[in-house]
Image (cartoon, rainbow, N blue to C red; front, side, top):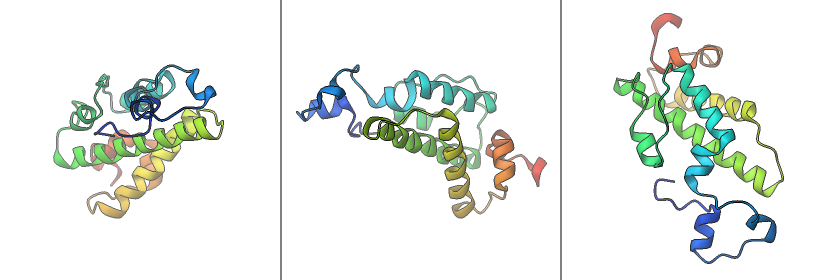
Length: 153
């Protein structure tokens, strides 16, 4: 994603890959559009950022979004948690996009949110020794858990 090599319509056309007629009828699809600015996905990003009480706008460059967490995140531990959550959001957004494109699925913001919650919590629980929140705590108040609040412990 950081190298802009995911097979979006833009990248496929740049590589002279022929697209099916039904894939050509939509506007040119860029990685930024798929992951950040599509109106459906952008709504989900904004909801998550509101949970952190951070109205941070999303940059047009994926790598910049990754390196610039919301201003409320200040410690190394918080930043690492943000990166895991951010990666889960991007990964599951891409998977949902593929489901919509290749399986005629429908975008489901609630399902996307649940997948991001589960994946990010399971990854943090398995690989981060300082992360000791239950899935219920993570689901009920991800903001406190991302910020490392001891209110739950």
